[in-house]
Length: 154
Image 1 (spheres, rainbow, N blue to C red):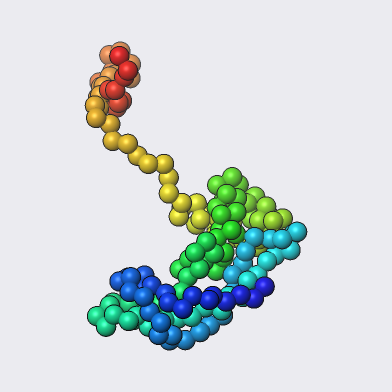
Image 2 (tube, rainbow, N blue to C red):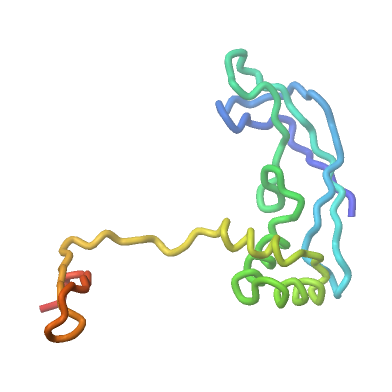
């Protein structure tokens, strides 16, 4: 599939200034979710813009399509979401084989990298922390230390 963007102005990702000055154009090939078992490739013609702000640290930048592309990405957002789920469910070799069934050629190391990239659950700092030291057996010297949150609904 071939596509191109139609926006006249694109905002700089660093300073937010809208720019119309085109630096160059290039074709970006994105792998997207398979359609009826066939891999879907999108040849997206994107433009690289010059930032209109003279003192901006970002001299040039490429336009991004919301919901489809992200910086340095070679996969569409749909394919990325599918691979994130595959990586969490069946990482490694099993996930790689499942990816091939879904027409997404991906290695086991890539799936493991995707898992490391995902954000885990948010950690909550306890307000009350209990510390308990106890001997593993009666009469033994040395102690084990246990921590527990001291919050209870009583």
